[in-house]
Image 1 (cartoon, rainbow, N blue to C red):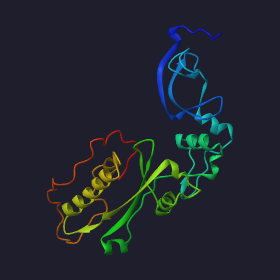
Image 2 (image 1 turned 30 degrees about the vertical axis):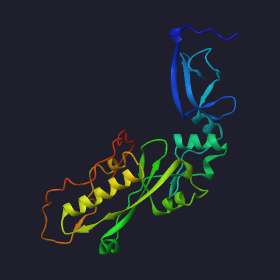
Image 3 (image 1 turned 180 degrees about the horizontal axis):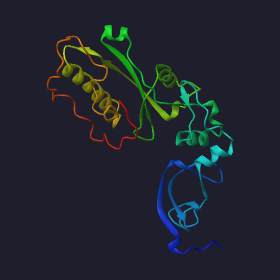
Length: 236
């Protein structure tokens, strides 16, 4: 007979999207309704007696139980204690040490880039949220190539040209702004424009040294997508 719990000890009708808990019976990520008890226990199903009430365990416990060193890092990748590591470990049932996840880097244009007038910037989006990171070209290439040493299943690679020089500030600002909004709209990268925090003139260098005051900016740039909200993380 199932154990009885007073309603005051039950928090029913909760939902998880698969990156928090696993079924205790097979360690597979669980997606769906669940309920919690006042003692901290979690079970699948809307409430006791509805559906299969299988115990749930935090995915992070699966990682820790395999003895993974959460402080391992290198110059290109990071293996932090995060939901990304937890989800991937649970899905593959392998140690995450063989798979790495991207970390944010700060990249700067070279003198050669300024001679050309633009340089390529590389980003990635976490597939389960609107989290965007600027990444190194090597990490970008590994994601594009579905390299076995990176969790390419969890991230979408992004690249775009970034204007560096122009006759005036407004020209460069609006060029880069339009590029970002076009990329967001075309590839459905909701919230991508917010990563830049309005700094679409970053790295700008004037071709006219006498022009020190930015002119008015154009209002004709492409509008952001309607769902560009709830951005996790950020930068420019």
